[in-house]
Length: 363
Length: 239
Image (cartoon, rainbow over all chains, first blue to last red; front, side, top):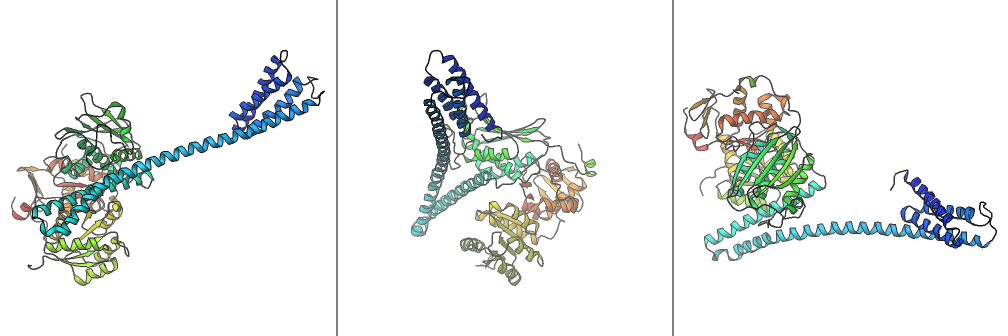
């Protein structure tokens, strides 16, 4: 609404509508009283007030008075007025125009305020969802940690060695999950606030895959993970720490949402401009209408009830990281059932290699 | 308790973290000296002559990296860095400043003790004369011979140098910068892609499954770590 020509569009509109009112008035003239024709002008002023700002509305009112005087008030075809009563009509037309323009301004301001409030309410709703989600996911582990550690300190000597060990193990496991959850929340906050600057460097995706599999060995142990990467994948210029997180989150997600021993396949495909990396699972999959939502901040996918923490933040983090890299991420249903999560990373011209030693390399 | 296995200086400002370090390291037979701040820590390292130093990077009075620099001015003792997940950059700085390895908070005691053992063993090892065992691969640096399942594998001079550099820090992390400087020279420290290519070659030649390497391990964003079959490494001496 603020581009410089907009004002003139408003005045042009005011002139056009007044002209239209004049034409209608001329058509009405043989059959109607002049007062009714004045009403047509008022209608034009209201239309201008609804569509444009205050200036054009006042302009339309003034122009209406002039046109009404010239074309309709006897003697028509001149600006002179025979009957002084019409001066009152002019004043009323002008006055009503001003009042309408004022009212329209207020209504418009209220509508804007309403929209802002709605936006704030949405932000608030998201914040509440985050808080309730975090507090739910934190409360359980905290309860376990408090309970188990107080049993150890207050009743420790009465417990058997096995019981003590089990309690301590629970504390460790819950604290580790909590720490991961907190790390994810912090990560999302940092990504959203734009506080993360990419540290791009040449990286090999198969190396990142190897590293992530090592890190998640325990969590992926119940599933069959198949690495299906081409022998000669080009290097990509990425922030490897962040992209490793994307791969890790996708693999963890696949493991979390499919039954044990389900096959999970990691693939990559090189195109002209991008590399497409896919994590495919052969589990139950997601319904079609949820594919778009899974990357939202607090979605958990209806059928994918999460057993442990994570709050669906994992995929939102993936999306933020991939977008930072100028790539895209999406979810697809596989024809035979199961899900594919794919993301792209842009390719750049390959870096220059050192000369000399390569000659000695076989193949 | 038997004679201490060594003295460990812990430079850490959080008393609770000091306490669990003290109890778990103490239970393993190490003597623990504690410094609650960086300035003190750098001085204590000179005074107590510990066998290993554990430095937290988030100290209130003095940057942990600075503590490492001060110690490195006069001593090669192993230094282990404790860092938070958000301190990626200072972790790498600390390693480049001479720290030998790191653990990321929060960590389990098992992980910490493993790092301590590797760092202490590293200083005791005499040299590169013994054979290096990586699964079914075996490397002798003196004779420049590498075999895999008994078959000779041809390694290029740069591959040997790269592997040698990692082997000198066996079990410890070596940053990209350190590797590039030692293998290609100081003007190549930014050329991370050299490492990507050569590590891939080394893995294809020496690892049973190059995609899931067991020995030439990637520390994403930081560098590489060579993990050998330790028992074999210490035991045998002939090819």
